[in-house]
Amino acid sequence: MPVLSGEITLPGFVDPHVHLREPSNNTAETIASGTRAALLGGYVLIGDMPNNPGHPTWSEQRMLEKHKISTDTSYIPVTFHAGSQPESDNVGELAKMAQQSLWLKLYGAPTTGNANDYEASDFREIASEWHRVAQDKPIGLHAGKNNLEDMIALIAGELGHHLHIHHVNSSQEVETISQAKDRGWAVTSGVCPHHLLKTSHDVRSEGWFARMQPPLASQTESEELMRHLANGSIDIVETDHAPHSSDSKLKAEQDNPEGIHEAGHTTCFGVPGIEFAAPLMFYQARRGHISFERVIDAMSTKPAEILGVSIGKNTHVHWNMREYRIGHDDDSRSNSLWTPYLGKMALGVVNALDIRGRRLVSAEEIVAQYPQVITSRETVI
Ligand SMILES: [Zn+2]
Image (cartoon, rainbow, N blue to C red; front, side):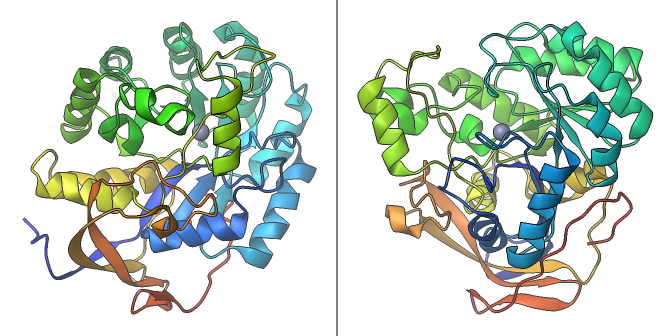
């Protein structure tokens, strides 16, 4: 059992679920600012989601636009996920995008402008094409209320393709996923720190600053989710780092305090969080809610394995395992300049970080950048 104090060295962390927002109508984050936050949070590879507001990654051209910005400005290696929706009419782009990415993200619930949940059959052509052109590159799913089972049956069952279920927020979803795993289907899942450490009650006092999709769960359910993560029923921790400015959150609170999720109502779902994910989870390990080994597995080994990459021995993080309470908003390193974890206990600060032997953080300060776009499995970071 590693000692959770003093200086410890761990492998770099990996998160396949981040929204860097650039380029898009949401300017609360950039590829530079988001990867900077990730670096200071102990990450060495993150996966950027395709649903950039007003500028979704639905073509090779859009994908390469992100690659260019990343090559010029990113602090750490990034992989950019392809997107395809029933409304995007881009099945013809998938073969080209598959060459440039490691992942296809599907939204079965309203997040890309669609008003209702989709049926699994709406994704048949898209999923079949991705399976044809990118057999070993996972499909990630933001499930709708009633399409999880059917999506699993279609993608993991019928096509035999690896399906990753993003941000589970109920034990019922975990149960459905466990049943698919028992059948030998390639299904994995991730949970977000906010679903483990915040609860639906927080919406009463934090309003839109505590609203995301899927929503926060009850206290009982969030405790269940932590147990499922601790015993491995949930595979990984993913942050769903989804920055919005305080002004955008406030506007939604003023325009739509009841949080009505319908066309014609101002909405602003999502919270930042990659900068504090590891320290929050280390603190949970210290408190005995999950083993320290399982935190490493869920935030480094397993997500790397799912993406098909590995973390080399010259890529590691020296953590100073000091305990602290997450302070004022300006402690947050995301460009959104606020954090949903204000006041929460955390353990660990990145003292130094190396990628392939190059030192990027020294004495808690960033000293270099390592921009690289990852497009092929088998890459050693
Ligand atoms: Zn997301």
